[in-house]
Amino acid sequence: MAATCWSLPDALCRFPALDNGTLREVRKTVDGGFRDLVRNYSDWIDAATAPLQVFLNTLERTFTSTPWLIVLIVLLVLVWASSRSMKIVGGTAIAMVLIGWMGLWEDTMVTLAMVSVCTILAVILGLPIGIIAARSDRMQRLVNPVLDVMQTLPSFVYLIPVVVIFGIGKVPGVIAVVIYAVPPMIRLTNLGIRMVDSEVLEAAEAFGSSPRQKLWNVQLPLALPALMTGVNQTIMMSLSMVVIASMVGVGGLGKNVLQAINNQFFTMGFLNGFALVAIAIVFDRASQAFGHRLQKHREVRHD
Image 1 (spheres, one colour):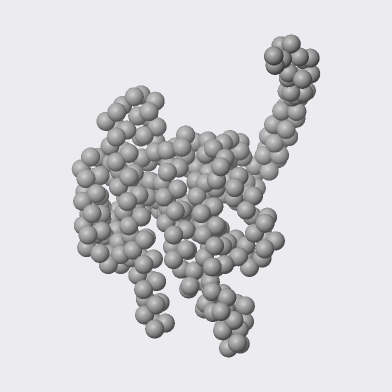
Image 2 (image 1 turned 90 degrees about the horizontal axis):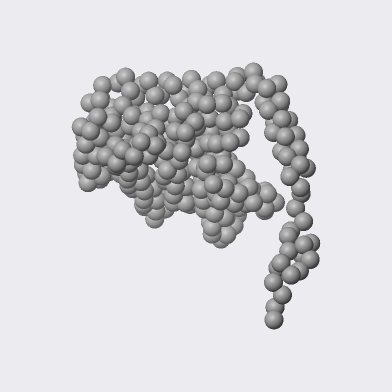
């Protein structure tokens, strides 16, 4: 008969973990040192995040203070310019009119401003890191574990260090969203550049192209579908993080969804969720259509 745990020595039944007193002291030391570091450099942190705060507030004011008809027309023009599809334009118009009819226009504009800023930052950060990782195996080995952690770590965990360092407000929410949304941009940029045919690169070298010329004239254009997929996924993940980011002071639709969850308001949560889904579908269809158009344009020029 197999021995049960309670009949074995205690050392074999329980993992030799730290005792509660030691573990408590370790936590106090780490947390206290972290808080002291943030307190000592708070002025520098505020100065570093001030431009981001100004940019986000300016974009948010622009979206919310501009008459809704002008915003709608500009949005439809941008969707048409990227997709050249009347179906997508018509769907966008219907979705935005329904959002305004439900009284969610201003909150939607706040969310659009935040997602726009987060996407811009994620692309600015992710594109060069992905390019460096694609051109250096050592860099890729360093980046991949970090990306694995960023993509598997629960999104709520991002908020803990962000709030400790930056406090409560819009900037901490933006930073948490960017951390959550940037990995697809890095991975897909790296993958797209590495998948460029080696024969094409050899031909470029035979014509005397420098490494920079190969990157800008050969690798990035051929990796364009992967890059656009990265942008698409970054937008989608930014929108999916909106509700969680509302826990640290970000307004918009995410704040309404959080309030609906806390107060069990089914209708309020459903309507705001519908607005988020509508925005996600619009961004998804427009960005995918834009990527397909660019790829076809380059194929025609190549032929």
